[in-house]
Length: 401
Image (cartoon, rainbow, N blue to C red):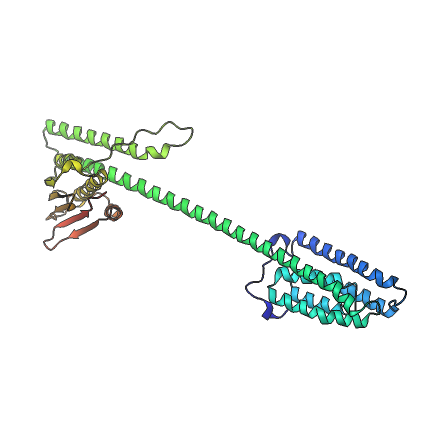
């Protein structure tokens, strides 16, 4: 088949009926046998015509060309244009080749666009006229009136099958695309949920564990502390550990909400803006020197989400100070209002000498999590050393939440 007739609009063969499948072989064999049987029916009236019968040579030629046309149908899927042209040419000298030619024309309408189909249909006119001049059993008008409706019907049936297959293919593609989109949406939802749980676990545990490490470090470097001070520090460590377990229990409770399991424990209450004072006081008990200035008007009207974000910012900043700048002085400033938004600044001096003993591990994910949290809230976050050498965490949060 010439490459010029292969276009993007050609209908691809379906895997279930392709020439290499068992179903495709059965369909092709059935088509060849049906064309042979119909060819015999087309040839029977010519054999019974006593006034102008076919000669022996014409009969042999008719049977031979009809057989060739039926056999060529085996390749009608792979080369539909070539098979249709061959059957039309064989039909010029064979009545029995007419059904095979009609089936080939119908297959051409299924697997190729309209232009080659119309070309073969137009070529049927001279072929029919040549057959009328060659055969003594019919005339041009009679054969034209008989064959033309059959040609139109074959083309119409083929185009109907083509449209139906294209529709089914489009529906399959849409269903596959919808499944892929749904799978992608579920994967994104799972990733977002894992990220949220990881962020909450980091926010909840990092500060508590750092406080435990600071208390334990104090006992390690001061073994000569009075028994009362040691007992007080141990009590603080016990309370901090208990709070960490309770908060961890609240965070991972959502992971147990599955059928057949016990009901998940109630989630821990979310922190608010007023909890910043308690957070600073707990950090002071671990030995940190922190100055707090909180001027928010009106303080009782701060949206819960805004207060929670401010608390997490201060919590992460104090946790990092305990890890990397233990013993330095820190300043926490929270100011703002409905018209100005909420401004959170945490500043600490760099220690003059490295912290004695092993430092607490850090992955750097805390500040990245803060940036994501503030960005989702529509605010801005800046962190790093300033011109004086102090390390600052500066966040601007919008009030409307």
